Length: 572
Image (cartoon, rainbow, N blue to C red):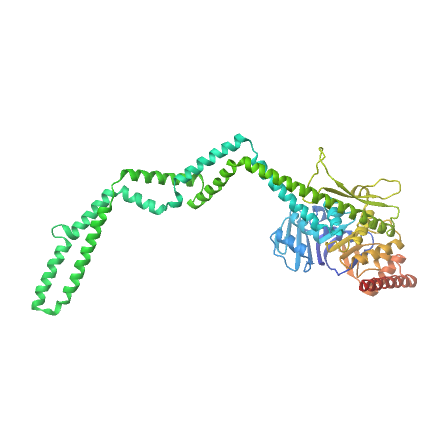
């Protein structure tokens, strides 16, 4: 539901804030006061194309802000998630248009594109009248309305699931059916790559250990000499550490026979001597392990170079190279069993196609039945809306190609089109070609009245819906809008008092000249002010006792109608 709309520097609107209500919101006022300008501004906030001409004179930009309550609108919250915006119960859309033609759009403070606004706007508000934003002329919306009325979403989604599976399997089959030459070339390439990767034995190799082994082999002579020298200094050579420590221990023992105060040192030096011997032995054994193996060194160098090459060629890490190897191993298996796999896939596709065809035809037949039922109900609504001589039909045509095969889509095989013949003797033609603005609004009103429960768009706007109709028909239109207002928030611009009398909330739009500028203002009317406004609409600019009495009677009739409808609903 649209709660608040702020407009600044738009056309003849200076700075305006409108707080809308639930149910039926009626906008009245003199011609040229700015009623349609407000609707046009709302169209911009929903993503319609803008021009700099709408910016108020001497202003640098035009700013539009709309606040919606979407607490009970899961379809809107789902759409917000698709554009990475966290859904909240309050939705604030802001759009600023600058004199240089640039535009900035925000949803709950997040910058978005105009296209994103259109995505959100298409499920928030539907504007009907002489505007671009008309859902009725879009074929996909015509299909959605029909499916929604007939509760056909589940069978349609079932067709969509089968269709996606068919497309996916067909794509795999086509890839597998590539020319034998191409497949063999890829098979040879994959085998060569796999052999190259397997030869590096990456799964058994630790890069660090390989590097350490290379360093040992490459420096084996130095390491052997170092180990020998260490052993000699500690144990083997004349004057080695072990020899000198042994002499020092004997001197301490001799000293202790004279003065025992240092006798504890004998134990310490003995322990040190044993530890030095152990260290010396470690390096002697280490020297024996050093391998002079040029052949092994050459193997390691080759392996290191191969691994570097593989990392440059396939992936930066050994783990990723092994993942790639596993992938091409599966591909090799697929190619080697190509004939077998092709045969299996062809059988599978035949089964999927058969199921898709059966399910799509069943959906089409259901649509045809629902289309006839819906067409009759809409024609009945036409007669009550002053279009009794108009004919309406929903055609469900199964699309086929030149060979007579069905053209499958995710929604089935049907081309659905709403057609109308507004006048006697005319052929049925697509509604977008034939219907005028006023007729289009009444056509949509008839459809919306029939589809009220199925339609998920929360806010509906009817502009110029009373074009070319009389007061009595206006009252019928008012009843229809009042009915729609049970499940939707409705906005309606009207010049007919019979229609305006049904308002839940009534706004009067006026304009005045102040400081050399024309300014539009909007006033939310009280019950007494509403009576005066309807009286003015009945009697022209002047109100009389008669026009006021007539206005009171009109409003009273609408309340009686509302009570009757409420009682009927409670009985249901």
